Image (cartoon, rainbow, N blue to C red; front, side, top):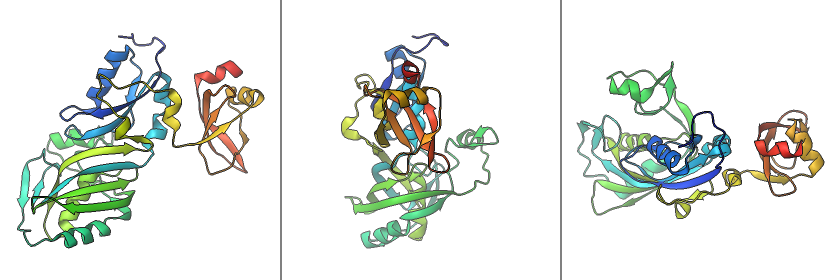
Length: 294
């Protein structure tokens, strides 16, 4: 295990298929031990009972996690009608039951359509959001519930299908970062005149990282650092420009809206730039690799 304060020597991105029953932080701990590095983090929490794509960064790649976290997410799962829980999912205690046997698949599709597009979503009390220095799920464990301001999210698509159980429906969602699928499930139940909870959840994609790329924590591959910016527009610069980047210079903006993943002539990722003012771009992040060109 690398010691605290020791510079990382292993760098890259791991696409983990998180198993059920462990936290995202547990997965980070597994990879710290496996790769012998303390500088490890993940790009978007999955609940302990949820499975699927968890992007984990090692070494300097952790600096790029903010760009992974902002990407679109895709999920599959099941919603159970007629039962509400404290956590809005199957892990919580039942708080209410509703007679909803008359609900049809067309009804559920209508409700899902109402929950598609730009929405204002109230974060659940079991989320990891901090309010006045405390995470909501910590307060929830103490039996405390506080007012939460709604947050803008976008549900790009919300598809539902019947299962063998008339009270359970399969769902498939593509959404913006920060969207809570358990809240979508609960809102679906309310729109249908009763209640519901999220029965199961699997994340199938985080931006360009798909479930087909994922593997268990003990066997997942460590991909190149540049994999973290696969969703950004790529620009390639000459050595003279790379030297300016190494010194954090503001530069003329490139084509597109940004941010831009900037690569030096030897295919080395050196920085990420973002729009600034008057047609310029400023560094959002300059990687240690840029020092070679300064």
